[in-house]
Figure (cartoon, rainbow, N blue to C red):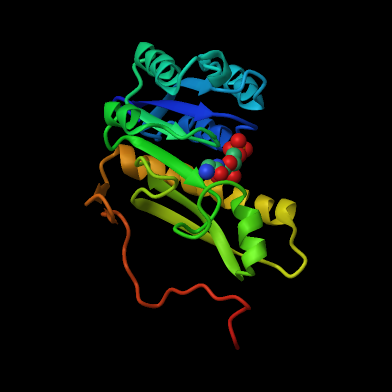
Length: 221
Ligand code: GAR
């Protein structure tokens, strides 16, 4: 890629497999972004190891070490600004960000969530899907607003829920799709191929067809 790459800040709390998917995408020459900085609110998060292994700067901003949410967010903002971050990707970041924080990166904060939103927002999305008995679930990448997993949806990927699934097996099937979807959505967002009216988005790069459908149980012959 000859053009300038958009600088991403990735916020994490855990294993960081989605961070890894973004790091791997950024390692490709034609990807329009680079990870400039990884911020974790959990000092022991494995995501930090992944970032270091990729040679990316890491910052720990432990929410427990800050007296208020405002101070916690100010420290994150500081880290992102110092790294020249332009877009923020939440990748398993398990704290809610305030409207004030989001306003500093207006329209440039993305999140991935392990359900087909608006179904099953919040914690334990895979467990919620199993408990509700849905036959298809998946993952969603969306712009972040001040609600819990409520912002305009950029893209989704669906997987079947199989009869013997538990949270682990279903979570792994969803995660494989997350790793494909997040880099794709980041590419579309940072290159300006997604527009949003605040509720819905339009992706200019995608051809439409009326022939497509996903079915569970399997399609009849
Ligand atoms: C992922 O499944 C992500 O979608 C989910 O946390 C997991 C993080 O895994 N995020 C949320 O539930 C946010 N509401 P990772 O650390 O291996 O990327």
